[in-house]
Structures are given as structure tokens and as C-alpha cells.
Length: 162
Image (cartoon, rainbow, N blue to C red; front, side, top):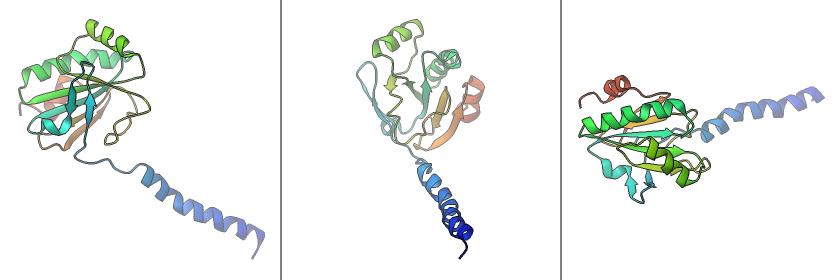
């Protein structure tokens, strides 16, 4: 066997196996994700306990201008739809006191929990940009995954007056 062929065979084998390794590392997340977090006010939030309601799971950060812009829209939507809940996930490693101070200036009508950058919830993909939102239907299934600003029109398109 030629030296070139000896070199190419292992490389070709590695190239064939690489997609399998990448696929395993980026395996699809569950269609009915679990989420249990402690909110900044010390309450427990369990996504499974929200069955029967639409749930907006919104990753945001205090430094994210589009996140700040959408927070009042999410609050208003939740307040005007009795069958909709929301959980804000502050995706940053700031001190909790800084996040609470931010929320005093930008209040919302839904609970907020802090998610450290190195410990994102297992059933949700790590955000590739902020804001990132998952909308969970009343049966607990992912109805939408939105990367980028969330608008009332987008919420209406997924949830509507349901």
C-alpha cells in the first residue's frame, strides 16, 4: 500500500465519522421541554405546572437593547391574555442585585430568573443571540422558537387570541 493511501484512509474514515459526532453533540432538544428555576423573588417556577396555558420563555440580558424594548410588549401580552404566562431568563453572570436594580427601572409583570452563561437549562438550546424566545403551547410542546426581537404581531401569529 502506498504511503499516500495509508495517510488518506484514516483521514477519510475520520471525515465519515465527524458528522455523526457533530449530530450527537447537537442532538435535537425535547419537544416537551422541562424547566425548573428559582426566580429572583425566591419563588419556584416549573414549566410543567403551567400546562393548560401558553408560556413565553424569554432569554434576555440587561445590556441587550432589543430585549429591553420587547419586555413591555411581553408584559402587556401576558396581562391581556389570561391563558398566557411568561418567564424571563436573565442570561448573564451579573450580580443578582444588578439585575434587580435594572428591573426597578424596567418592571415586568412576569417572573424573572437568572441563568448563568455556563449553566443553560438542558432542554433548551443555548441562545445564539439575544433575545431568544420559545413559545410553549398549552400541552407543553414547543410551538415556536424565535431568535431576535419579539413583537406583539409575532406573539399574535403564534398564540393569537387563543
